[in-house]
Image (cartoon, rainbow over all chains, first blue to last red; front, side, top):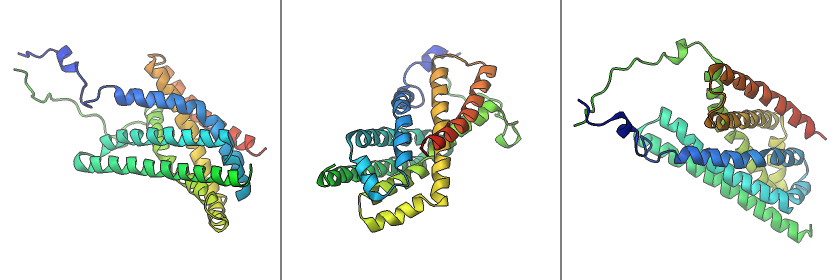
Length: 130
Length: 129
């Protein structure tokens, strides 16, 4: 006889140990990205292929700089947390932990690099008097 | 005490002998696009870094980013972004408890697939002007 009811088995934070937290975070960041991506694609798409001066001038303006920073920060967190899902499906144990750490690290490196580039372009823009 | 005994459950059919369906295809594509667009992001951020570094370095990276290879990476990434975008909205709709029946879910899958191609072509046209 089972002393633990089906209801009791389901109560708590489940197999993930964190409940719906991850799912909710992905949904919330997805909505944020959905608002930003179309405009950002337009800015990047129209700047790709331009000469260096134009690229710096574009990304040193407040709107493209702030939007790109936001897309990179929110996007890379969304990416890193998103990779956890396929990692949990295909890799297990220590290898899974190592892969998750690697993916989170990659996302942070991309984030920091993009912010450094943006910051420097804003600074060059100031020197050029844009 | 509660028994932790494993229940004999039927095994799910193996992927290779399972008939391809819109619901499974659209789910797998969400994963592939979400992870795959990191390639486009890497190339783009490298290009941004080069623009902030020096004229020589920019010319080097810009040549790669605007070559046939760069065009291929960015076009596929764009397709991936739009697919993942539509698939994400589909998940938000599912989360709201709507369009959960098989027919509606398949319809949304087709919208994601065809929609992503349409949006990619539209984006490519718009950024030319």
